[in-house]
Image 1 (tube, rainbow, N blue to C red):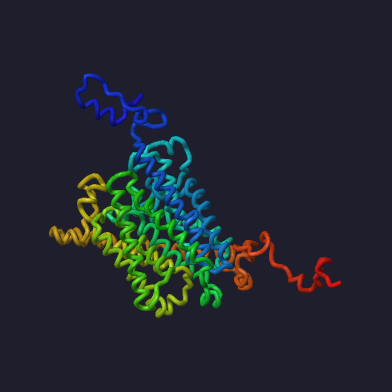
Image 2: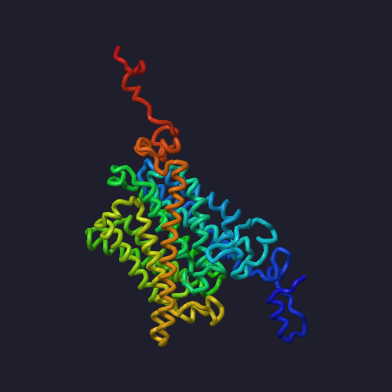
Length: 486
């Protein structure tokens, strides 16, 4: 039997007898020498937390944040995307995102289902590849579901069924491989994107906005009058999203170490600051606080900290990012959007462009500004990495060129992700429109869920049956004999 790394370390010490490890620390066929049980346990937990952000987190958030007549359709779009992405991920998309080199843009498509592949060590950390595959799937799934927030309330569900695998294959895998894959051209340049500020949020925001342009707007009445059907449920979904971000950012180091701990703390600190700043601006401008606004501020804080949570580390930098994420997207959504004819032309029901594209871009640039050299070395495990330092530290250390180079890499990554998603999403929408209508008919849009799925979200009478004509009003009531006059 192979000896574990701990056993080999203990051999370096002089003992009168060979130490016997507890049975839980010994190697066996299910726990090979290279696997760290604590890291694997945390990574599985983190993957489950990210999955819970989508199912049921975003299902609840979407289903309650739209009008009642679109609750089922909105939630179902998220549920379908989660299942479809998993199937595509293990059949070809994982290898395109993290597999062997094929081009500087994507890896070689292949199955991620064989025992030999899934039970080997992952490329990052001391965990099995099966854990890594599932963790990265959860990232891919939530990206597509976030994109759906721009298309709620009018997209043909059959068009959505085609859109999900096509966009995952042609767009998400390219962004993931370019920035995270071993042969990706942006990774080789040294771009900073800890957990997906560009790969997930900038891409979903740009792609969602682009797809919304091609799908077309909701009915005019729905755009003008679209109150949430259940604010309490909306808060429940938002809460799952917030707490699930502990796995989103905390799981990115693929280890239960100091980087994951600081990533989680920075995530929640930045988010709290962002929420309070958004609330403060609402109260100052509109003279009252808004629950929906608070949720938007929460989301922008989560998104902004994502690309730099693990290598910012300094809480003051996370606080600065929280202030920026609570104010800049607020301005683009609440002021610029209302003044711009272009923004008014494109119907983005949940403001995904502002909460994800704007906040993701902001976070990516600020990560290049605040990336701390010592924590970059801790993350990469070597001083020979090609990332950073952040501009603020390069100025302090007299290495201005290195800081400017890092900011240039961040701008290059943002331009590539934006341009690629703009073009590819447009081509996908044009292709699907040749097969099926992207938008539902106006008559069906007036009805909503019942027209799309034959189901409604709330049954307020009986056991789901529709309310029939008031037949009791046309009947003469028969009183019992003891109530009648003699």
